[in-house]
Image (cartoon, rainbow, N blue to C red; front, side, top):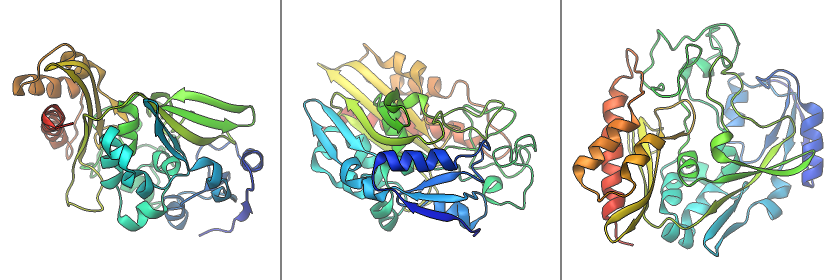
Length: 337
């Protein structure tokens, strides 16, 4: 691990100033200041020499203001420094937003969930082996313009949706799929104050600049997430190589609003298969106004992966993903609420 300076922020203004002052023009953040909350991802990448921040800004003192869990009034607000385990265990979230509780319970290990924060979780970087192993020069996320070793390498865990000819790295998180499915809004605190954007606008598809992963500006921090409405009929289903502490091969976040057997609204988000948190809006359109049956679930699943592009080792994800979507739809449609 390389040397770095350490600063503990006592308030949001101090954190923003410290991060903005330390931010470099390099989008790879090798020389920039980085915020430290749970540290469960950042410290890993620093040890691997993938991230080389010159300064660390500890934002844990902001937890007293940024860790609230506030359901009520038909909405939900979650502080970005709330711990994953606390949110997953919250009784009202389990009742009204089970897709959120499930996405958090199925992530990482119990020890990591006790440390990791919601804001840090959605900002985690890809688990692509070629990104995390600096002995590979050709990674466009680490070294723009160097190429993508995964294209012709071992790409079993890589994305089939949202890919480009520059990068096929998969976004690894689970919680983000629940947020994008529920039309969450992200509260961002920066030099100009606080602004809100749809969660769907936070992450950037790789395109020709895979090294730029989010729309956050230098010095900005995620301070909260908010969701309108209640979604008690919602599920998160995750298929993985083992049943604990493993990233998704394919996952689905499903939320349904069903009245008298008819689906009035539907949300479908996919994980483990895309370069960013992925909303399958074309698939959702097939559900609205319909009565659920298995044939409809298969059509929706097919639509969700209509634009998928598999490669040598990961083409199996397309068929697996369809089955995961169909099964998650079945679970959501038949759950008792």
